[in-house]
Length: 437
Image (cartoon, rainbow, N blue to C red):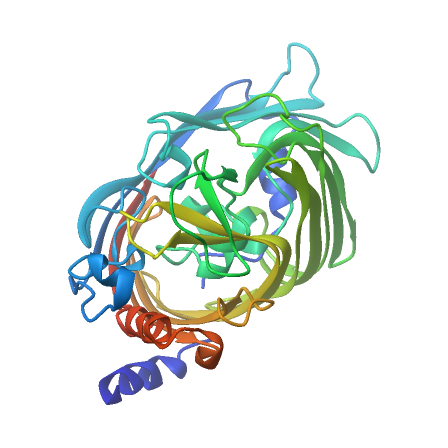
């Protein structure tokens, strides 16, 4: 513990980049200049090595004793969850974008595919992640239709190949915003009180959905104001239809003071709020799925500082129960809540080097005393920029989880098991190469 605090203390002084987060992603990802070419191919790859200390759980009691000697899922590398250390092609994306100038220079498109190993490709080796067209005919109301990123949190919108300084997203965003569809499970056994048995029926959403978005941005001097309203399926992104007919409505407002620059590398101070609301069918019933958030982003010269708060209500994913790959079913809170926040910063102290620091706290299942867990993660990061298109990112994540209300867990064997599993969570080290073309 002392060595951990020493490491954190050394980085705290540096927490306040030129790999920008602060920008207007609605504009950057949804639009092209009128003089852009008809066809502009682009892509990137991110081979990633992840290491988590192999430390199987021991000491489990009662019925859970059958899991002694196994690694909990949080200590395994996704999406396959087979080993704790692995080198894999985390992302490999190839796409094209451009303006349909033969038809109109007011229509542009964006298309992207994924063949890497991540939550999006957990069910299919190749996935279309983006396929949209934007119509810029109505002043103040651009219309984008198809499959693309929801106008939600900053981690959901950021372009990972140009502007995301870490290897892994926060647990808060992965749990609340990367959706995997679920259905009731008929596997044997009972879920903990307050949770329902579930089976996962899709890969991860990648922060995306199929729908229609109305949006635009307005500039006055150094100020920029933007809005977005998206009506979407709330369905798995590999399905064109909407199985239950319900729609999600996602809204986002952002205000920015621009210091200089443009595109994904501009200097600015931005604040934003967003909300996503809809329903999901689980068995024969419908349950709310609401996500809300607010945050800020500051970037100027060689410094970056940003933070975000997100809360979720209704359906909250709980993961396998117990948290092992051989568990008979997953769990979901049907009428539960969760919330979390992060604060992060970076310092580009040399043209080729950057130091990053992020702290996250995520509190899950707050309406179920026995099921509530509080996750704390401190990420120490360094980036080396080989050239404009290639960089190496190294992260060390100090991870811990608290059993929030141990006295609410009965019988005593279950309480002991919960604490044993929480104490077994290990730190994570990752190294990622990003090459964009």
